[in-house]
Length: 214
Image 1 (tube, rainbow, N blue to C red):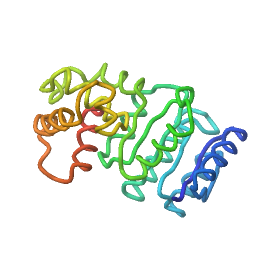
Image 2 (image 1 turned 30 degrees about the vertical axis):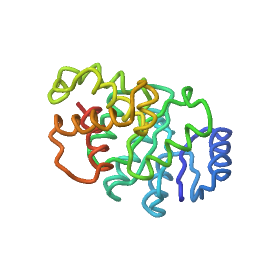
Image 3 (image 1 turned 90 degrees about the horizontal axis):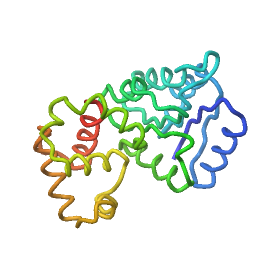
């Protein structure tokens, strides 16, 4: 799997490169600024990009803006954002196109390599993976909006875990219910969010996007 990596700190960039290579990813570009990131994304068209939101020269949102431009140029370019901060606006901008293949993780809440690699693979497959802290911030603004008010508290729990990138089995284990019960909740969520029949993976992404984008 081909990866473009954007991180301005040398030690972290080098460490991430080594981690990815150890898990059989091919790092086709490792850059430290937004200009080189955009060039790498448009020329290499990787399977997924790992992007620090704040890059030189202003360390505000250069990484995000480069990723968004790449997603406009190459529709559906999968992007996993890394940040030290929860920024509602940044998360919503990333989710706005509804295409899936997005992630937003907080650097200090990635506790092991398996967690990171699993999230990266899910994003590369078109999934949506959000840190629970990001979800909480987004929900603070979207909880009163339709169609979220149609969901029961349990359905919101299930959808929140789906937004973290959890499988049905993992959702069941977290909530101490059966996988069959999880499947019933998910079908109910699809119906209440007016998601027409299609591949379950596609509807899963759309449901998570609706949940996060409010």
